[in-house]
Length: 178
Image 1 (cartoon, one colour):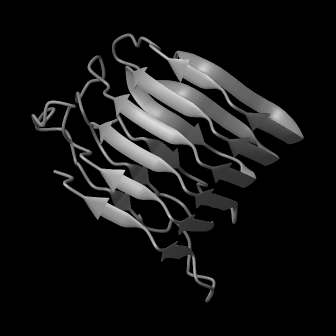
Image 2: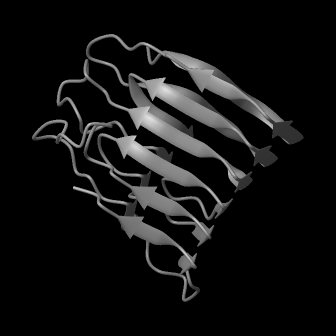
């Protein structure tokens, strides 16, 4: 069982604003998540996940829109490969053509990637987003050998390309990542 600070499943057309999820603890061998989303047409504004023993956000939904949201200090110390599952945002679609959009969001001090779009066949857009010091803790030390430390891992597809642009980054910055 993957512990979650907040689980949003089976819902559509909601708006969430001004929440902070913090200090979600994990347990071996599972990776926990600050917020897990399996829904559609959801707007997130000014949401922060912090000090998560695992990943910040795990997204498996369509038409998800994030504005000014943060993932800070995510590290999966209890997973079978510590550091490998501490993504700020894990954006997967596993064969579905989902849309996920980020505007003004930040990922910092996450043990793996700021954003991990591997195994995503949908469209993911980034506007004015920052990814810095991922793969490192707040003191600047590399988390572990399992830590990727990519700012934006744009990923690969599980199905044939559709001919449309699937990743778009505009006015974004990735700096000081491992």
